[in-house]
Amino acid sequence: MKPTDQSDDRRLYRVSDAMRLLSLSRTVIYEQIRSGRLRSVTQGRARLIPASAITEYISLLEQEARKAS
Image (cartoon, rainbow, N blue to C red):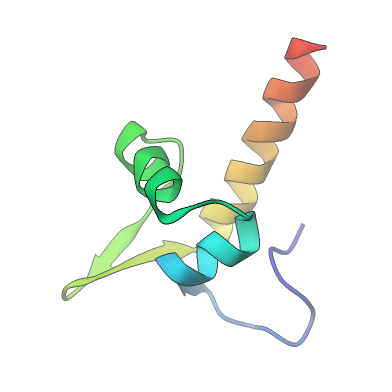
């Protein structure tokens, strides 16, 4: 599952991009990063989220939804 449309080949996303992709607020994104549920890396002062981490996070949410039902 690719986190964005076919024309976007980025492998790293800024927090603002992840907010848009996941429909989550900046606060929630950083809470998920702090809790270890959403992986991120830093490059200089920038916090970046790998595309694979976004995909894994979506899978985690889907697994949790299946367990809850």
